[in-house]
Image (cartoon, one colour):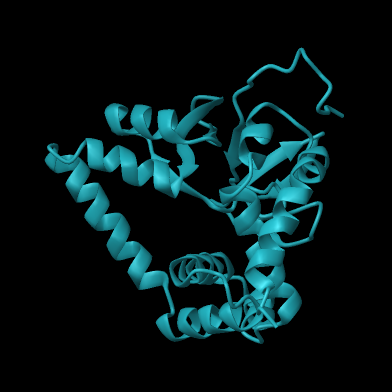
Length: 231
């Protein structure tokens, strides 16, 4: 287990795998469908949520400039590999990066028509997957429990939850009940990734548990600020 006191930590490339058959996450038991992604951690297969990487977006291989820029701007990133039976080797499929990093990279590539087309396709795909009524209700519930959470942030958390739970029957049902604990977990995950150096610690190969403990106080500070009703 790696901790804060380790001076010899190296910035290692994180790798996730596109599965060729249905499997299950060994931490939460969720099914990972064929074509889904998993990360091996201590020889244990984890879904992207349990690996704390479900906030990343997939950038397919093919546009070297966009990939290079997105990777440069993303604090946390992972190479996506898939095993080719024909070639008997793992082949690179693309990169997982932070959405803000991809947006920034696309802005830098706007003079290229290909990049504009990629952006249009991705935005169309994103809108298609979002259940707007669900997102609005989820966002309203976030602001109910966390009245000081900025509207734009509540919307972003709600949209991420909608994308995350789409297609996952058991979790979709639980999510649409807007359980307070489930909403708190979503808010905490957002704070951890966006308001602390958690992703940076993962990128430096910290153990997830150690990294979470390292940023716990920062997360609690933001949670208290968002939840404070002033009464």
